[in-house]
Every structure is written in structure tokens, then in C-alpha cells.
Image (cartoon, rainbow, N blue to C red; front, side, top):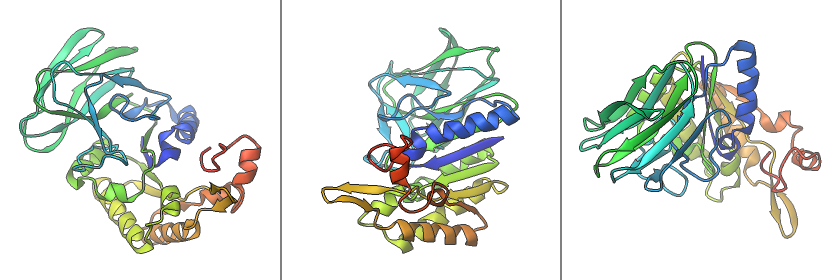
Length: 310
């Protein structure tokens, strides 16, 4: 059973997602990490159940500060190298290991090692589409290295490490993200990546950055949510989709704490879209105590002093 959680920094930190992961895996079996981004693509990215790194020659695309062609794969973030000898590593165990990459005209070659021994080479050259390299390792933990073989471009989306049974809870968060970013991703690449995961549940946890943005538009936000949900429905028609509303948040100013200006409207739009697209809505702000409750969470040591993050 695969669960995908998309979201902003609340998701990218992996705190809440990891708590969900541990709870579900304790009940229904550990399926492994599932999908994780390649290397360490941006500062603050982490997974408590997966370890990876990369050499210095990779360029990250898909973060809030670097939106390019939308070809980012399942997690919305990719690494690109244009030189031989650049590496990405992973330490994990499972019944299946997959490397997810962009197949593209003129794409470069890769060698993949397991514990210092080559397990294969592949070319990423071909028609533009999502590519997957699959390997079935022996039981136990392994150290994997992907190495570029030429100066031809190579773009990596991430790893999939999983067992044949159990639950995966896959963290797909980007710091500062808004739901509209997903609507700008390449629809064909995303659809192929989501279909490969065949998720039973897709969680979309957005709204915090929208609620603070001076350029937020409720009509455009509703349109973006409907577009993204439509793409997820096309890729995984059997999946349940849950919209998670933003938590209670305050903006710290020199005059004191101020409620995020669009919070009520963001929650209203998400509720409407969830109802009209046959999705679920979970009221995070309501469940944590309603408007103003973040002050109590900060006092209790359960939220940071920025009055935004847990």
C-alpha cells in the first residue's frame, strides 16, 4: 500500500509524515521508504527512513527559487549533471530498488553500483518520458552509488526502495511550496510517475504559503487545486485524495502577532474543492484548537517560535 503526501515545509520536514508512517507501519507492516528524492537536493530536505547524498556538480530544479521546465518527476524536484564522475548515493534495504530518471534526447549514461560492485549501466537517451531502472537486491542493507559516465546531461528524480508487502508513506514536500506549483509540472512525466506508484491515498497539504501571499487569488487557487486533483485522478483513479487545510499560523511583526491574511479564504476554497471533487478535507487548524491555538502550541513547546512550524 503506497501513500503519497505532497505539501510545503510542514511536509518537507518529515516530522508529521514520519509519525504517520510509523503508526501505519506498526499496524500494517513496514513497506520501506518507497520514493525518496535523489541525493540532498535542497537545504532542509530529510527523510527519517532513508539516507542519500550527492556530489557537488548537480543542479537542483523544482524548488521555489528555481522553477524551469516542470520535468521533475514524482516529487517535483530533480538533480541534473553535465559532467562525468558526478555521483548520487543511497543507503537503504528492501526487496526492490528503482532509480527514477528523465529519459531525454541526448541523455547521458549512468553506472550503478551496489556495495562497490557494478550492477549495471544504462543510457538515459531516448524519447522524452519518465524512466525507471529496476534491481532486486539480496536481503539486508546496501550502499548504492550512481555515477555519470559522460558530459551528456543526466537528470535524476529519485529512488524507490520498498518491500513486497506493507505500507509506504512517502514524503513529497518542498519548502515554501504552493499547490499551484504542481499544476505547472509536466503532466505526462507526473502522470507516469504517479501511475508507477499506484497509490491508495494521496494527501495534499497546502495552504500556509497561500494564506500569507500578497498575490493570492481565490479563483486561481481553486483552478490550480482542480487541475492537480484531475491529474492525480487520471494517474491513479482508485486512489483516495485528502486535502489538508493549513494549521493555525501567525505572522510576527513589530506590532505583535498577526493572523495570516487569507487563512479563512484558503480553508473555504479547499473545503469547496474537496466537496465538489469527491475528495476528503481535514481541518488541521480546527483539530489543533481553532483560530489562535498556535499560541498555546508555542507555549507548550509543540511549535516553533515563528508561530508557523511545528
